[in-house]
Length: 218
Image (tube, rainbow, N blue to C red; front, side):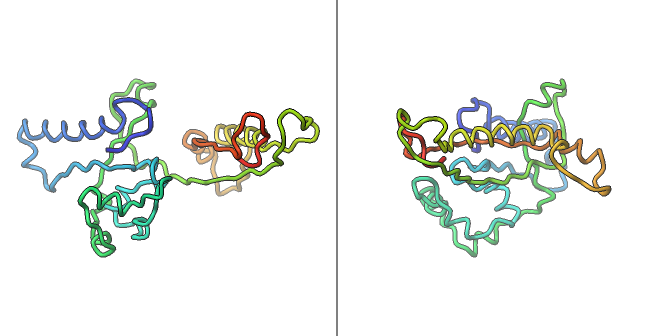
């Protein structure tokens, strides 16, 4: 069951329960047996990539586009996806992994967010979901004692990363002010970018991570 850390009791579980409830309603009114194609409810795990930092694990697998090398991806504790599957009595080989494939046009997902509630719509149908690109960025500075290095002599990566985050937020909120485009890119495309682009800095770690030390890198 996929979820985001500390986002609330309905995240992930609501989508699964809603799918099961929909099938129950179809069964009660006698329409389930009249469907032209079989229906399955699939509960993905770590679709957001919180643990393994590899997004769309479940949907990528059933669409047949997830490379078998993904089984060797590990989390922060060096536990691989393959070993986690084995712990749950799932023996997955490269051959069986590649055989797992559904018709991508027949796969439907449930996506949660605040937009429908804000506009007052109970339900909406989307054409796709947000593609994700994840980057690990290192900003290096000059490590020093926090009490003895004057501000004029500092190369503090924490200050640099703060400026970078603010710049990125401004860019994604107002891309038309930063991006250049030719006549092939219409105004509607730029407006679409303004309403759909998102950027998030979800993790920050410092070294050596001490309150009295100017960090060496972020």
